[in-house]
Image (cartoon, rainbow, N blue to C red; front, side):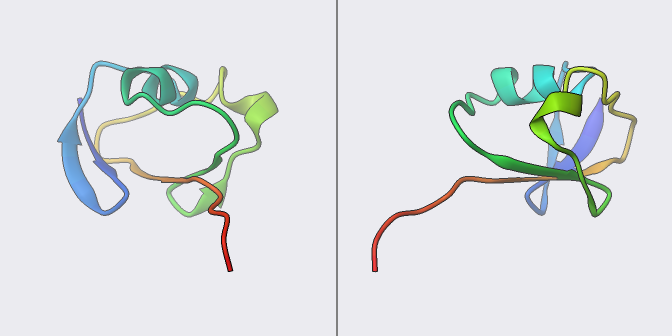
Length: 64
């Protein structure tokens, strides 16, 4: 399926947001949004992805 991940077109096999995180190697604490709607971690397993979805995955950064 084709989606847009962090502004870049991407072909993925994942069908849920949780699967996408695993497929793309994201682990630990991240913030997620699909089509500009925030998706809390507790809902990622059930959040289905559709062709053309715009997904943002943000990792916290440390430093000053």
